[in-house]
Length: 171
Image (cartoon, rainbow, N blue to C red; front, side, top):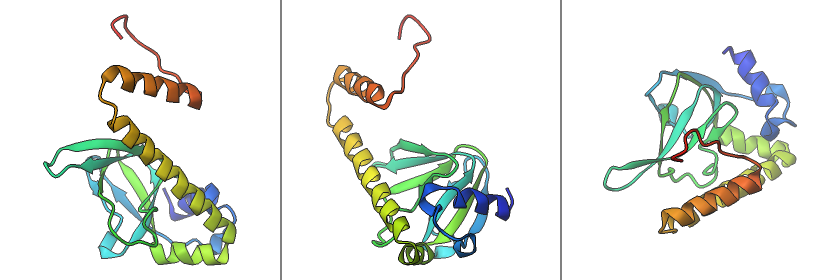
């Protein structure tokens, strides 16, 4: 993707919809499948925006076991929840496919919110959604039986309007 194409994509994202194109500053990086992705390119804290490809988000235990938490697709952001509290997130990012990432300095991201107050409200909404997502994950982890986990999964899928298709009679 060209920088112009990425800028168009960013400007069309709800988070940045009120921002002037000239105020959107970013660099881009390309990654291969299997590469680790950072939110600190060159040691500088950034918000990453997936422009192309898929990135897996993994939580790694002290024992070294990793669990997939989510998959980021184009227009998803990472390094976003700690724009103001600069403690690193306890997750790792790995490319599932060839990826392009747009990096915006966290200081530039914060400055945009001062210029565009409605962006600050969308940021607060995004942080609330992430908190609800993590609370749901914790709830799911605290359920001890597989049967109850399946029930909760099916209830949430029904509430979201999504559905699963079983491909064999054993499922």
